[in-house]
Length: 334
Image (cartoon, rainbow, N blue to C red; front, side, top):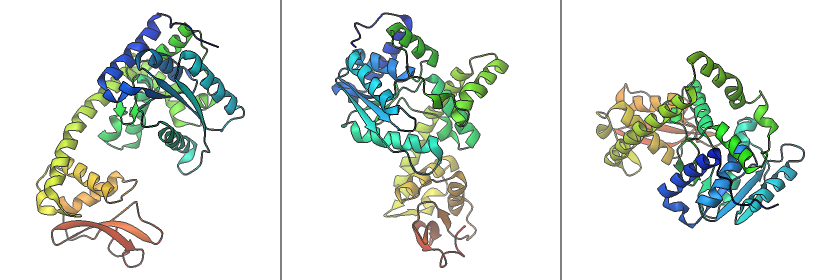
């Protein structure tokens, strides 16, 4: 099967223009890109547009092996990629396992496989405006702050998302214009997944109640929060530079900073020191060691190992991070 010159339909042109703008904005794409291709409408339309707009395109098809016949689906997607003109098409069989539920485990495994196979190229992902709206709603429900509500970036190296301004209905129509029926993943219709229920129930209901335009409004909000967050992050870097004294932080350099900036600086520092899965509660407790100091003990963080905990504590005007044994640290950590 070989696909001829791309049709000039309005939907496919919209996808092409989105990819063209992304490529022109990012020098990393000059030597070609990889595209994560599932065979669904979003990634199929993205692949077709990228072949024309982004130079050499290398398709990466992840086979999660979660459904009977998934290997055949992956092989057909790779065949379509070659027919569209991709320089190469590689199927990546993976084993989905680990904590966090099926959705989270599959996502983590998929990104690891793509990262290992991309050969230093940026990887284009088929996330659309609708995916961005769903991501913002998920962040809102989790109460995880503006960083989560800011949604996905158009480029968070090596992951590129040219279609964040394109509706899912457009990629569907683009596939129709191409004459390529997309693969319909049964998991995308399964109500056991939170994102599916957002897509099929919550967002349509919000559109009905609020009179439309909800997805676009959510993505605009995300863009505004990203812009504000970028400024706060820059201020936090400056603060962290001033407060750093080797592996410790000088409390005097932190105490008068605005809490929003100070917490961002603390978050960056704690992540560098080995903290994992840092929650808002933990971050605020760590910030209290600076802004609400009462002589309290250290704060236990995620990132320890068996039998010990990772703890941030204050002593003699400095913050430090270290490992504390379960028994020896039990009276000092919270």
